[in-house]
Length: 83
Image (cartoon, rainbow, N blue to C red; front, side, top):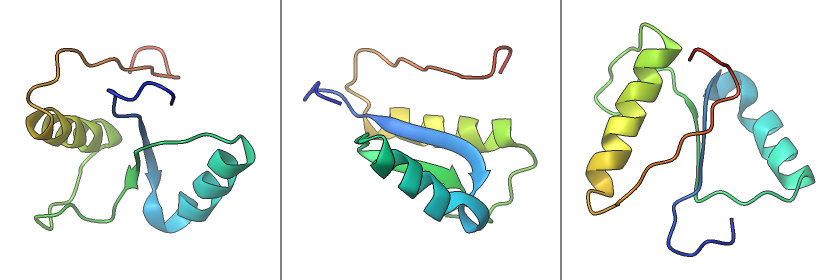
């Protein structure tokens, strides 16, 4: 959060409609700061449906890497081993 040359992203496969307010409350209560908080939408920007959480995360990460194409490093911390 304190590293100014980094983009800090919280990415979850939880649905926007069911979990957005809860995630916001948790983040606020723990005094966490993210540049982007991304929950799984009902449909993507091109109205695409994601067949799995992994497909959603892959699409998001692909867009993130394309947006920040000059980034030298991507670090991912996953709370579910094997994902």
